[in-house]
Length: 478
View 1 (cartoon, rainbow, N blue to C red):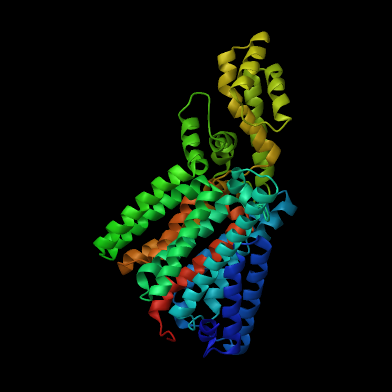
View 2: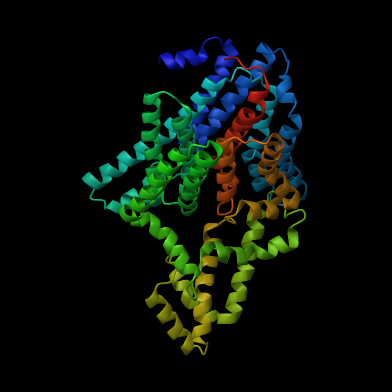
């Protein structure tokens, strides 16, 4: 409690309120999108009242220096508003516009609210609040899983995949992203903090966050975990010039990777199974099949997109056209046989199912091998139609909705910091890894289609941008 009291000392009332709102938001983000949305609203209210009452409408000159950046970032929301001018599904469109308000709100907060009171300790406090939120969320669900295994007869599979997130059903890719940011924060504290107790605490939290990523089994999360280890080793060895520490950490990472491979085969097999599918004849990953289904939308609407509100309708229509194309090849009778399994929500064929379908195809006078090559695409397309699945790629999703201008504005979030780092000839490892994680995950998930991803990204992107480019260029209260 003493340390918490210290970070609020010397602040004016509305500065304290704004900092408290940021701490609350950092804790709330891992738990539920609605809790994060409430935290976002509280932060906006505190920032506005602080601007009016405390600042008396005076702005921070160091923040104004980068007003062009904040304007470019906020334009991401504006392009979705413009997309309403040529959309037919107004209800879904306005839902999208309201959902993406974070792209406007957070740049506005960090442009107009004077953040000069955010010294190093207060920035760290926000980081610790987020890590604590992640670990509380994880421990709550882990305890629930243990209870199910001990008292309800659940198997060890209860600890893996989405079932671990049984309470709030938070999609595992978002959980992995939260934990990945926490990992980098803990890692920096381990090597940048001289207090032994703090180092030990961060090592323990780091280990728990690694376990969290392994158990939720997001393929992108697991792959980025390996990339995180590589980034941390590179940072220690070549940036910080701590070669011995780099060797120790590198060895520890190898041991952890081998241990995870042996102790948690349920997690690693998701990656090996994907590789097997992609290298096996007549198999595929559902994202590749879905890309075939909406590819024509990219080809025909890449300039302006289909409109903010028409993305779902147009994608469904595109999937249906692709499905009809498959039916034209395999025949409606064979398609009807596959539909019997689809009706039971069986969207991936096992061997006996394939054999039965191929036998039916032969009876209907169709080439069994040709039918076999289309079974998986047909089933995955049915899955996309039935579940209203999105593009599973934020870049393609953006082009389909609002065109290439929207994509360029989205990419600006990644390009602008890199350009500024090149000009300064040094970079912030925590911010760099955060952007890398978002860029990587956005290739496999439409992470800005949910509040879980929008609020998380917009808040920490602006906070880390402020820390990397504004905090060091102004007189900060220390």
